Length: 214
Image 1: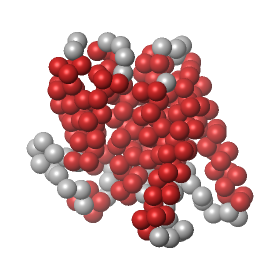
Image 2: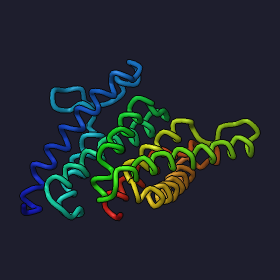
Image 3: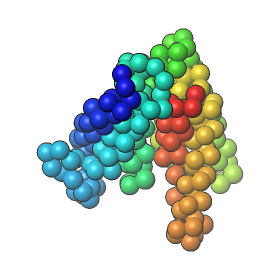
Image 4: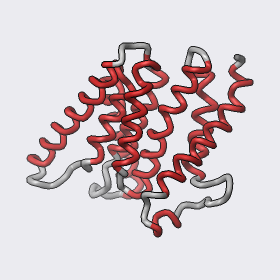
């Protein structure tokens, strides 16, 4: 299928998946947080999530090789990554249910998308969880009981690893690098060293990069 022709229905599908993801996430959000999101019309539930997914889905036919099935797998894998990144940036909170759904999607599709055996998604998921659990423990020791990262970031790392399968190590390294760039941006914008370290969004960007680069 021609990539230009495929991009239009792909963008519509991305918008629809974004609406469904935002609707499901709304069920978990406190009312005051849900009301703060501009949208809430029949077609616009969360404009940031939906527009991001529309752009990503439209770009997939141009940047992902393969057939329509592989394009659909890339699109579905991108949904929880975008939803969690946006929610984390907006609320500084990771909804465990959403991350676990993303983990399930990664275990189901990640290995097939990357063309490896099914157990690579299991290894990637376990590896991500273990690596960030270790970082979490080391951080607590260094900060004397403080939490340098949220415990939800461990679940995100597991989700990213499962979706990246055999590319889990690359995805997590990219995620850490993206987190550093985002943190630097926050430092510059807010002009303070005491800012929120956005591990979650950075990790999700690493997961998205793995869909294209690995």
